[in-house]
Length: 340
Ligand code: NAD
Ligand code: LMR
Image (cartoon, rainbow, N blue to C red; front, side, top):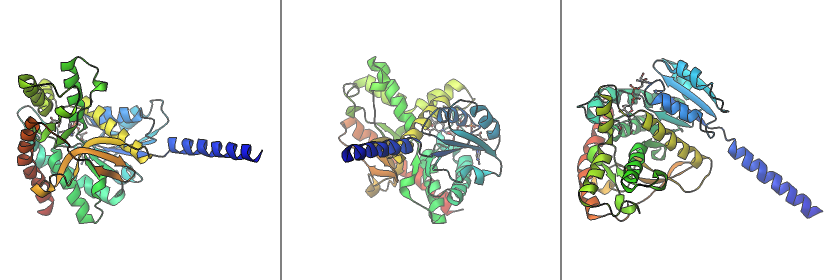
């Protein structure tokens, strides 16, 4: 009898434990929620059962987006904020996803966005430092290679810097690699996982196709074309949109996926691994302070930065080109804040 009661109690505790982790409160804030990325990403976050509260902020338009998204019949609550009401948007947020800033037009590089987006990201970093300094920050605004260092420098100045909590979102490169390789191989992209390392622009994007079962026998001209398509996939969309912006829908998908991975890690799931651009020791000895590799995510953020692993001769060359470019982008971000 005693043992039956204990067993019943244990199973009830286990059920309660499960129920409470399934219902863990997870407030996600989106800064730039009224924009091309912000709107579809907010919709996907509303559809994610792990998000319990969604806070949508933009300098203009977020309350309308929030009203619209809030009618989707999932359990999470949605609130919209605009203009000066960023404090209400950020207070209590555990994850902040930032697609605020201007997108490219044909003929522009991501670096051409620096002059406008650097100040936007700096302002938003100051607000996050004040109202949710412990939140995980997911930076989508370009140029990511520079905006991540900008965010980090602001946090250092404010005395709230924790390198494990600031992420540059490079998931779109991972999503594209999977899709483009799957197309070549005629397989379902869900079975194709490609690790993409480096940064998020042109030659700094380095797909490690040799580490993927479906990718290691892609050679010659086909290999070169695939790498080029992954590195310049953003340009493909910018050109097709012909002045109406850059990737928004695929980025919304990628941003929601990265956010879901962070929440799963926060909720205690083990083995959640995503490539992301973070403060990294991988090439630090060569002056590269931030670098994307596979990162194991956990309740404190970037728990473990995984090594690059074995790479092919071609990938060695791609990495050299990446390492030659990336420190300039990073330095530009750091100096922007230091010189302000
Ligand atoms: P968009 O112009 O459609 O939307 C940007 C939104 O940001 C607008 O609604 C604008 O009002 C808002 N905004 C501007 N300043 C703000 C501020 N201070 N606070 C809050 N909101 C502010 O642009 P988009 O297509 O959504 O792209 C946004 C950014 O994401 C661009 O910089 C783009 O280059 C970048 N991007 C990154 C990736 C990636 O892989 N990391 C992919 C696609 C686009
Ligand atoms: C992308 O990769 O699509 C984004 O970085 C947007 C861009 O400017 O290409």
